[in-house]
Length: 279
Image (cartoon, rainbow, N blue to C red):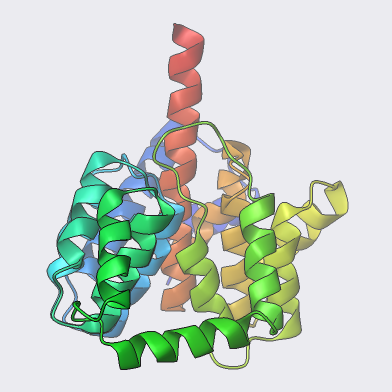
């Protein structure tokens, strides 16, 4: 259940005091930290996916990177996807370590990520796959090729391209564009049309789109709430904190995790802006 201060904040009944902002940021970090330590692999995966919206400079990212050794393969795949968006030396090191993963799915995902980042280790790994000298077997590679060819003819691929092309960039090193979060929403069963539209509206700059996304935060469908949080976070506008903060108490884990990551992302952007002004 949401605390009274959060409910009043959502209703606009109290001012957004600095102390409340700080408390929300601390709560958001604790939500994600507990989820990363959860015994439930699905909860750990949801936290990892959500952190693709956060800042790579956040202390939680060190915890995320260490989870490349998680015992659940799906969690490790999510780590690769999230870390691949943050082009830091530690992220590259994490991906290189994942090349030796026992699961060929993980090692191949790491190879593709490193290749896309221009790292020589990715090129070498892919060449080894072609030559049949990698744990990512030829059979698995063929399956991936078929999947890649198929996805080019599905709407999801187009949506993903638009998300990459239209995502806002704050100019702050270490910020991802939430591709892992995007993919997770789109693959969550039969994603409803409104949620898909909300993901696409993340690239729109007109006032009507912003108003629609804010309204979607209170929709009864969790897919739409999660998509709205995702898109609002990627606008990189700290003034949206007032709308996103209440969602850190959302009843649905997928929404709650994204809101927590969004809070940390926007807090980092606001701090960076203040630091630049102080120079």
